[in-house]
Image (cartoon, rainbow, N blue to C red):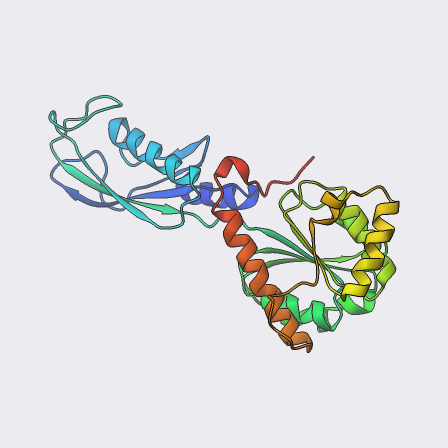
Length: 280
């Protein structure tokens, strides 16, 4: 598998990686400028020259993955007897500058349950971001191609689910998925809250509605066996505080901004503590 195929592989498997490119060469070096390789947490593909050069670059790339780095770095290595050689000697006599670029191969999962007026507007906003975006509704009429056309031309990978029992779709989402519950039916909302709280691995559970609605839901959810700690996992009302507008577009923008805050916090976590992989 070459470096280009490796990037596609990481995209397909939702794995993070770093693209390493020989940016500049002075003197003699094992590979020419433009040579590339890809490094993941466990594997590597293609080559930028082997030996100490490549091993040092891979080590640095994995350190970047370990802190979820998003900013590219330059790494310059001398290939002489006097240079530091932690992984064996390379004395070609030259100097190589490598560009290490974190790849955007891991896309967060966001699922919107309820594609009514607010859900559709929220889908339109989120579709502009590099997400795995799931649109779920129990009503087939809300999911027609014509109605969803504005959501389909953005950066997000959109999956549409006509799900008469929406909580069945929720169970298939991966760990760390962000869940937004805003269906047309309070009974559906309550069933989704119950199902979401039975998934301790979810990243965010947001519920649209008033304080009165949440008081009633808490009583119902406690009867289903959920504790106060469980209920604290639900964010309601959703959206940034201080935005009073109630039109669908205003709510959608406010909720999307809140999700960006959640995602930025999650992406600042160490790699071992964050996974968007599908669960068994």
